[in-house]
Length: 272
Image (cartoon, rainbow, N blue to C red):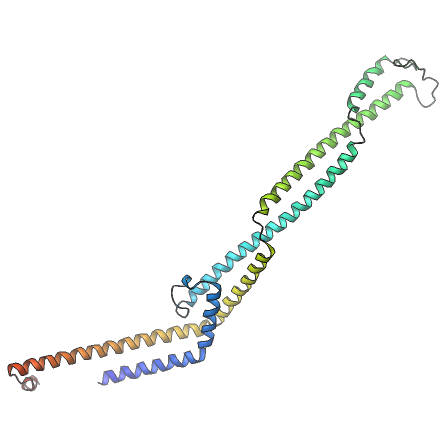
């Protein structure tokens, strides 16, 4: 009886302490659990929030990292798309400028320069070998110098034509590459509302993580008190069960002894 009274008193004391803790912190724990379940499913925890609050922090950290990776990828895609968009604009403008200059240069400049260069070999004086006109009376320059000047001009035009052609090909390649990257990235670009939703969720998870860490001592104390109460109550229940079993056995033994005419009280005295 003394052992039972002691264990019962201990159990009552532990229960009282645990109930006192609950009365002071129930709303805080309930709020934390509700906020956690609004962010992650209950099935993600191995048990109730008070018992596995440390595990909840790990799950919140994993979710925060996952969101940060998605947001980082979304921002990177958007930045790269904007840069490629600028590249497309610049390349289109450059192609327009190149085409405008190409339209002012005859495409036959190179061939014409070659023909004139061969023709200079037939010029010995101021007489043009093509039209027989006498250019010796011109004060600016003689015919040979005039043809050489024209050949140099046409050759320069031909070289410019080649340079512009190469520049246009480069811009077209740059334009195609940027346009292709934009098209490939477009399929995975997140809409603005989804990005905003992820940012809000990221903020909620950070706030929840901070609140849980702030309440760590309270949570740990409550978990320990509850575990102690469960252990104490189980010991008391086991003690009561054992006493009930012993009492039932004693009653059975007394009934059997009575049936066979044995006085157990004499046995107890002799044993004593």
